[in-house]
Image (cartoon, rainbow, N blue to C red; front, side, top):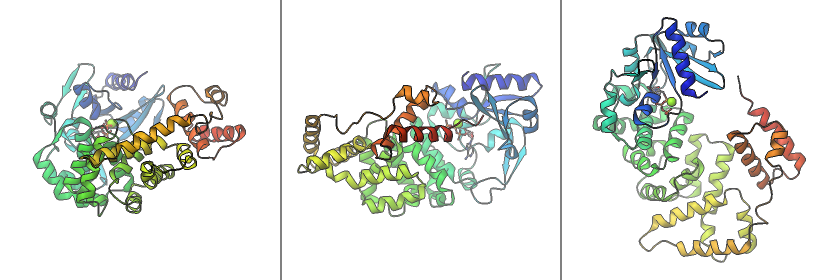
Length: 408
Ligand code: ATP
Ligand code: MG
């Protein structure tokens, strides 16, 4: 069952029981754009109590704010009661919610393109906020007064930049002015929430335009004090040279490509990255110059090659060199380096994984994307020297499986 099918089934059951229930928010936007939706959210006039009564398996974590997660087969769907948020005392979270009509629920949402509903039975869009017109015009516009709306929840400023980046939309002039005017307040939002948005901006192929918005609005400087002018200009160029698909650590290293490693690592603290992300960035920034050193010894080169993030390091340096442009680039050094690497062969610095797919399944892993993730994480632990024997690897995998057990 797909997430969409689960959501539609939930809607049907709610409607059969006399409630109003609709798909809401991001999934409606994505459907209208013809792009795959991440998850399908349901909005309804049923209260959390009704929802819990009607479905066998639910998670009640957000019930206080009107949100219940309904579990259906292997899917989880957020079912939210139409609500209005009140008392944004700190620009972060509403302290109280009130259950209201669909129309009022639409008006508490952030942007017009995110404020629409869809009735899968009638195949009808309900649009109280002119979202369809803005979708056509490719515009991110707050619902209601932008100063007020950003003032209620400063994170919305980063969300605006994130959606503009992901969808390649423009931010409406009044909304943009309000982002610029409020940018310094972004620090009132928690590091975790900031980090999620920054990650989504920087891992997107359109990351360079995202960075332009972050810099021009003043958000970048508020989040990373001291990150200005020349460094920022270089970052924008370098980000534009990265390959399409990169992970957060490489994109962040590229954002700070024009800065000292010390400065970059200090600035990253606010993002509350994981230990392995921090290690990844530190590796990339501290070693970035080494690839240009044509005198680098075979031993040193092999040592670098054995690192799990070597090819990210190469990609970072490639982007940096291309960003320099205008004859200042040093692409030849990188071409020479590639030749040296080819000449080395890859047997030594690419050891065989301690456990293969069959071994992992025997230990209890289930085939699918998570098997790939497990096998990659194990291989990184192996390359990093944490795992040296098969036995150690097995113990490590068992712990991993325990930690990643699904809560159902
Ligand atoms: P994505 O595809 O990235 O999940 P989304 O639009 O679904 O994008 P979510 O964060 O999943 O975004 O939120 C779902 C919906 O809830 C949004 O479309 C929007 O209507 C509403 N929403 C989410 N966060 C906020 C917020 N900070 N302020 C107001 N409305 C919000
Ligand atoms: Mg969503």
